[in-house]
Image 1 (cartoon, one colour):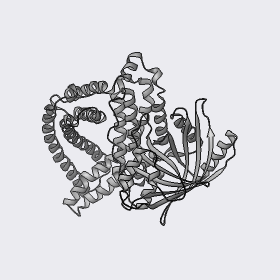
Image 2: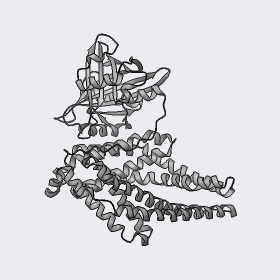
Image 3: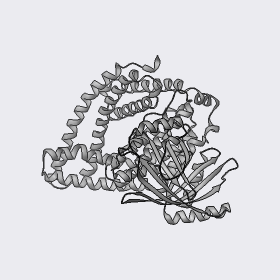
Image 4: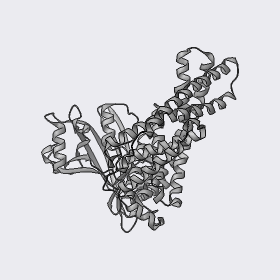
Length: 511
């Protein structure tokens, strides 16, 4: 979401012009415009892009500059990139002029003997306004308007870039929230390179899954908490556009996964976090989860019950009518979910939580003992957190064969928390030692998730039954109920085997 100490906000053209006018007037500087033409190069097989490298040549009206960027591990919420710039005599790239040895070697390996060719270009008009929102802070507001061009395809650019020149990067979020109060803005997570490559390939996007954990052994507990949360926020926002387009229900599912992981991160570190300070962000997370939940419930019910039954009984009038009724309810839930994700409240959640995490404004509320806990090495904290989660699962699973729906739901939540915690802290322990536990947790979560889906389906059936009319519709209800009863019995059998495997796993963090 934040690259090279920069934050990018998409905005409507009229709002861009108004915000720019207000910023230059307040700063008391002239709004000088520059035209920037940037051409991105790669091999015919996209060798650079496949290695996470972007090569561009830019003309700013006075000369040519080559820039090479590659992803590098970050810290403190910033998606940092290695970046090297060098002047050129003309518009052709020259890999021998890359000053950074690491980037130069990576670029040479990626291209080999293949020739570089222009893939796409951006043409923008930029106006830069310097602002100082605090004595320790200097930020450039870059108002960009233009186009990405890839052959005959075009995509507009209408953005405000916030670039931190001096002071802490978290000031960018505060300034972005101030701009959001004046006009609807949207965090633009994609770089120009990402947008251009997508346009050039004319490829369809796909749902984004959670990234591998960014936790490293040299981190403190509070650094790990912050990094985990930022990865969850990026996972959430990366699926926003696909979810709003409504082409694939997996986008919505991944947004819910990101939110649950985010909520779980707060829970994992709850012993050291001040509850009064965490309550507001958790309330916003819960608001969005509650809004997305019904749409996902209807997706699962239709995909896992109605559609399989219709495949076995094609042409059954009651099932067809029931499918249409369920689809209408799903459409209503999807509209509500899209309104929430398209809302300014969603953007404020994103920016507000990022500012909260990056600035650590809550640190003054942390008691002394908790502060020491937050400063301890993350591996020490991880071992205690994993042990507590493990004990919770064992405690809630006692006598699991006799557990009712409510107790099984609590066990499912505990299993999910232990699984997320294991993923969060995975880089701190040898993978082979954690693999058996992860495998048993996945099996447990699948079985318990299936049981929970059956309980959710029963609730949705009751809602739908109230409006059911006619013999065929009631028969369809009975068929669906029977389908779920069979599925429930199978999930309980799976649970028995999964629980046995879980009991046999070692607590690898104890070594």
